[in-house]
Image (cartoon, rainbow, N blue to C red; front, side, top):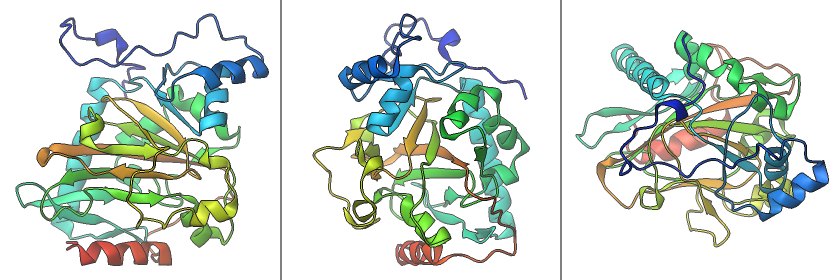
Length: 317
């Protein structure tokens, strides 16, 4: 696979094009002590964008430790964004033709697109169906992210829900116009019967998402909350109401976000309708628990059965 490390080199010259704010200039801050980095990170706006370098910088580590998330500026090139989306379209066609509605025991969810046609809206274990995606998520540019968890951290291609591709759209028959408040700790309670340790969700974003487009909302700092608050601060997947402390994660195609899966997060519904509301993202799980792969004989867990029942009530196909 030929991979471009960033999109910055091919920025359009047209000044009217909607470009993101430049990432934080850390060129003179790479040797900060932990205390200095923590002090500077505390002063940064919550929407600060960072550049993914060969190693996580002191300020990036301090920002993640304090707030529980990071936004990296356009880590994937336009070419890679298009290639990944093409792979998902191919996989979608294969699933529709075969009639498969489960992969490694995890339901595959189809809703309807704005034209009323079947639309893949959530797919787990995506990288197991695409050698291109499997290679992409293991590219060396992501090594600094992996090492945030630890030297022994790995990508869970066949663990938990694997690499998950999401499509959200506001249309009649859509199963996923939004997603209620939740923490990924709930999933791990079902998997392991105990609260998880530190865990990072790495998300690649494929669309320009503004406040009006809905998108990811996070509650900064909640990754360090108590186990009780992790499970009961809100009603998982049912609570939808905006929180006064939430932060909207604004994205451009190719952006990479990192958020601790223990923090409360949701997906806001778009204020628009139709194809203009399409929002696509892909989440890569980094895990360091005991290796626990799934296979085609795996059965859906209670977590999946409950969520599947909710979606079927909305008209899942």
